Length: 309
Image 1 (cartoon, rainbow, N blue to C red):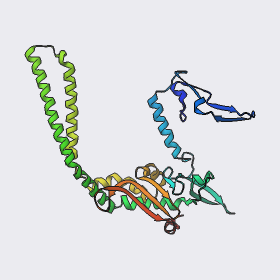
Image 2: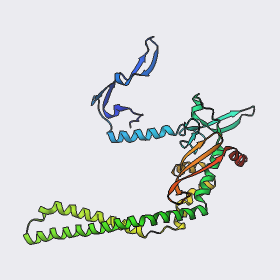
Image 3: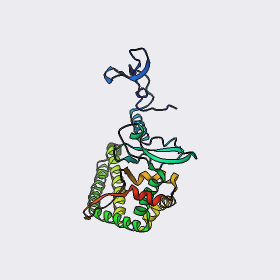
Image 4: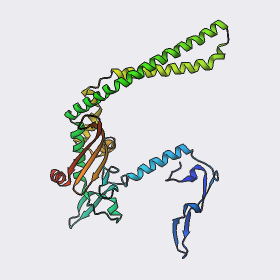
């Protein structure tokens, strides 16, 4: 099995020469990358072991993994890894564990990566338990309680109703198209019967028409279901039941597996925390939808969750 590393073009059969400068002018071995214009790349210069599509997909996955920081090797479960950012410098925050004092008390926090890298950022680290409990409670109170399920049901049905007119037009277009295709099939078969030509002569055309007919019939089936669909609170509750229980009980390993499906970003400012969800809700004027955003002061978060540690 080949292990693909970030942007290793050798797997695509590209021979690369003069990529690194191994020894400085003073003779000290200090490897560094050469300027791009000095690098020589030869397409097909070595055996290819992976196609371009797979290579591109791997690069995307590896880039996503970089955003997850040290979550692979972390002993603590940091459910906000890849989601929480510093509001001052915009750099992601990472989980950090340290032991302090004579009794070696354990402190688990989220720390700005910019500050850790000794950049010009003064953002203080944030207690892991406080911020994670806050985000989970916000998630539960806004999406998973019974009142929220009712509002979400109403919102989904309103959205479905607004799209019914567009679905109706698509349904009419597909119906007319299906009639035309069926008529074309009948005419083609009639020509075969009347002229006595071989069915193989029009075989390609008939296969194409049959494929179109099958596609249109499936489309009509889906559009009809969508047009008649009525979403109930029971259906919505069933969809979120498992996630809701994990959030309610603060089951961190389980919450980590799905929280990115609901939370877009958590931003920590000097005096407040902002949570942006991936769920859209009606705006204040009820003229459209906007992402659900919740803000709370850091002072209040610490006051509310100081007994959770």
